Structures are given as structure tokens and as C-alpha cells.
Amino acid sequence: MAQPFADNNKTGLTRDLIEAMFPMFEQASAGAIAVDSECRITWINASYAALLGVDNPEAVIGQPVRPVIPHTRMPEVVASGRPLLLDIMEYGDQQLVVTRLPFFDESGAVIGAVAFVLYDDLQPLTPLVSKYRRLHQDLLAARKALARHARGTRYSLGDFVGASTAALEVKRRARLAAGRDMPVLILGETGTGKEVLAQSIHAVSGRAGKPFVGVNLAAVPENLLEAEFFGVVPGAFTGADKRAREGKFKLANGGTLFLDEVGDMPLALQAKLLRALQEGEIEALGSNRVESVDVRVIAATSRNLEAMMAEGSFRSDLYYRLNVLEIPIPPLRDRLADMGILCEALLEDICQGLGVRGEITDEGLEALSAHDWPGNIRELRNVLERALTMDEDSGTLDADAIFKVLPKQAASRSGKAGLHGGAAKPLSEVVAEAEAEAIRNALLVSRGNRSQAARLLGISRSALYEKLARVS
Image (cartoon, rainbow, N blue to C red; front, side, top):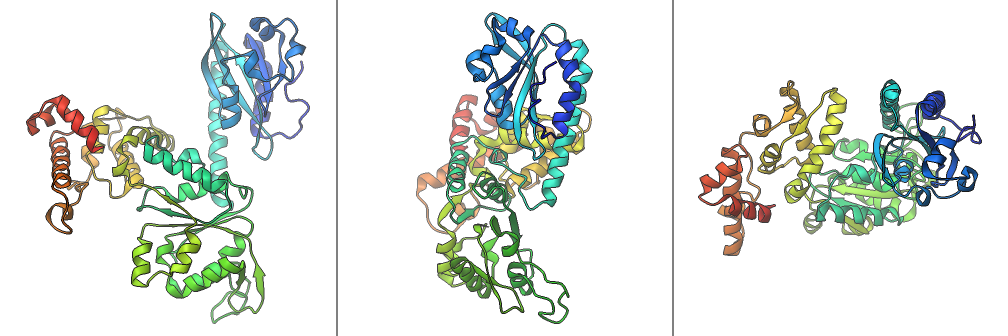
């Protein structure tokens, strides 16, 4: 029997798995087809050709798959590297049950995909599909674990979840940053996903094959920061290691250096960092030798760098060196339209880790939307994880399950200072903030029940929906 990828001997675990199962899949299926990394047909068996009405199977070899099978999802499998184990595909007046599997080489690159039409009888393939699903999940987990130890990234742009206008603008700027080798400054509160975005930019940039090295400046003692950045030669100071220690600049050479919480950098080191960025040169502690480095810097901070410049705690020349392309990430409370899709993505990841199932109801989402989220996405994940842990039986998170784990004193989204102090605001803005807080309090008291909240507020349910749309 001809094999769809027999001319390529670079194989990995997934390839070996498919090749071992291939005869059984093909025998039990009503047709099979394979494509390469550019979605051109490399192989098709006689039964699938007959099903498609193709008289001469050899004639379609090398042709793009979509003109031959208009509704195929093979390009999606090749692009994502993820299998579609059981899917319905329409072809003419037929509805076909199809399984599609990606093919990888040893480096993990997708080199094609294979599909089987299973519409005749699914029963013989059930154990095979289950086995492939388990092995595929094990493979993804192993790759994720390896990525943690390698000088690489484990996040892609798809991991920055959101479809709101604000989230799409963040992704647009991230793609712009990925296509241009320039410094990037990511601004956002703690927990908004600044490192996810930084890794995503690196993963699709021209430096993707080179190291991604991150350093959290808030987590490193000030007296060790210089050594952390530039490295140390043996015996540079009392107690120094007898072996040379490379700094983050050297480790990131050719790739990306991520400076997390750059606003926490002391002034003395700011000057040395600026020189390294301008000259492309570093000098290890205790060394007289200058080394050239080539790094792309992505910086992130939750602090107001412009205010810090005004007070003299952050150098303006360093700020302008870092802030060539600025990407502000809005806090979660300003993108509540993404709450549903964020919960879906987070629950999928949490459930996989805990080995449980979980879903959230509309009332549960309403309860989440009533909270201020000072901890942003990180806090949302924590709330969902705690709610799932406490609700072991059903796995369904309703308003009650959410309110059990939300902080008792939910902070006002507008903040008390905005209503009782600080700079004067237009009356319309003050009234809008007070109305928004009243709605949130009513939802909290009613535990997410909108009908009850509307009654508490003395308005109709439709009026509440209109006001909620404006608040969000």
C-alpha cells in the first residue's frame, strides 16, 4: 500500500503513531487522502476518489486540496497542527464524518495532514480515536514541559484571548511589532498578560528560532541586577563563582530580551542598560573585554513611566529608546465583552490540568462581570480554579458557585475617589459612574439574577439590559 508521506524520512512521535495506525484507519474508513505543508494533495486512495467522483486519482496529485474538496478543513489542521478527530463535512448532498490528523517532522514542524472518511461505521475506530487523543494530549504536554526548560516561548498570539475592539487592537499592534525588528513597550496592570504578549511577538518574529530570555526586574535584588544583565567573570568579587556566569544579554544574543517591570529598574542601571542598547555592547562584571550583542528588547511595566520621568526616577532617554512601539493592554474591567471567551479558554486549560470537566452558565458570567478585577486575567483564572475545586460534583459554575469564591468586598470599578474626592468631573460622568455602581451592587445582592436586580433598581429588565450594555 502506498504511504502518503513515504518520501520524507524525518519523523517524530506523531508520525510514527499515524503510520502504525494508518492501515487500520484506512481499512475501516470509506476513503483517505493526504496533503503536504502547502495543502497540496500528495496521495488519495481509490475509494475516496470514487466518493468524490474523481475518475483518475493521479490527476489530482499535486493539486490544491480546496478546489477538489471545497469544504475541507485540512488547511486548518496544517496551520494549527491540531487534529480534528470527528467532524461533519458536507460534500454535495452527503454529510461525511471525517477524522483529520496532522503530520510532524522531528523538529515539530507540520509537514502535512491525512484525513479519513468514517461515515460508514464509527464503531471499529472508537478505540483508535480514543488512543490517538490520549497520545496527542501527552505529546502536547511533553512539548509544553520542554518549552519551559528551553530558551524559547510557550505562548503564541492565539493565547492572548479576546475578540473585543480593545483586544483586537492589542493583537493588531502585536502583529505589527512582530514584523518589525524594533523595541516594544507593553503597558498594563498586573495580570493583564504582558508576558504572554511579549512571547507571542517573539514567536512570530524573524527571531523566533533564537532565544527568548526574560528577567523580572522587580524580583531581582538591586545589588545583583548588573550581574544578572551583563554576567560575571570568575572572581569578580568576594564570594563570586569560580566559573564564568553569562548574563541575560549574552543568553539572549540573536533573540529577544524581555524586561518585565522595567519601571522598577534603579537609575544607576538605567544608564548602563541605555549604553548597551545604543552601542550593542556589554562588559561583564570584573572583565575589561567588551562583547558585541544583538538583542531585540521588549519591555513591560505596570507603572506610569511618564510620571516617573517627571519626578526624575526614570530616564527620559531610556524611555524613548524603549518606547518605539507602544502596546497598551486594557484591564479586564474595560473589556468585559471578552469575559465569555476568556472563561471558555481558561476553563479548558484548568480542566485539563485538574482532570475534571467544567462549564459556566450565563448567570455565572453575569456574576463575574459585576466584579472589579483588580488582579485582571490572573485573578479571573484563580477565581475559576477555586470555584471548580469547591464544586467537584456538577462542574457547572453558576452565580452561586462564583459568589462563593469572589472577594466579599468587591471593589467599585469606578473607584471611590472618583465619587468622593480628587479632581472635579462633569456631572454626566459622575451620574454615569454612580449608576454603574448601583447596577453592580444590585447584581451582587441578587447573585447575578437580572430580573431581581431590575426590581431592586426599580427599572424594567429591558432597561437594565440597555444600561448593562453601556456599562460594559
